[in-house]
Each structure stands twice: as structure tokens, then as C-alpha cells.
Image 1 (cartoon, rainbow, N blue to C red):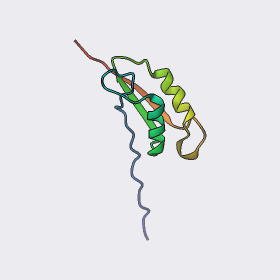
Image 2: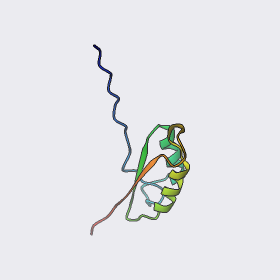
Image 3: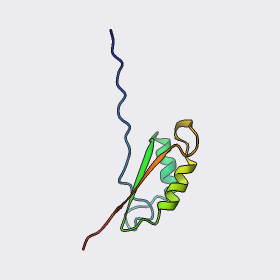
Image 4: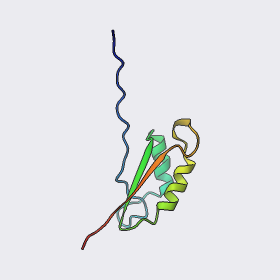
Length: 86
């Protein structure tokens, strides 16, 4: 009897810097969401440096993206922050 081939785990970027991460990120959050959807990512995480200013825009933009033809808002998001300690 043949066994089914297991599917590879889905890859999700968690350390992505948006344009809100000054001097480290360049892409606006809307563009990041569209790119993640285009590559077939089921989720996206952003972790800007020393701020969380993009949180509201991040959740709004992910709500407009439909993951692989499913209903809008089906792409999941994770928000984080890299903090500089002095």
C-alpha cells in the first residue's frame, strides 16, 4: 500500500521590517501584504525596530487580502517589535 506524500510545512516570514522601521525597511505594509499573498504565504509577521506604529495599518491591510481565493481577511498576521537596549 502506498502512503501519501506529506506536504511541506508552510513557510512564514516573521522578521520583516516595514517602512515604519526607519533605515531598515523600505516597503509599505500594503505592498508587503500583496507580496505575501502572491507567494502563497498563509500569514505574515512584521517586526519593526523600536516602534509599533504600523500595527493598525498592518491589520487593516491584511483584512483586505484574501489568501488563495478564500474570503478577505483570511491571511493571518503577527506583530512584533525589535527593541534596542542601551
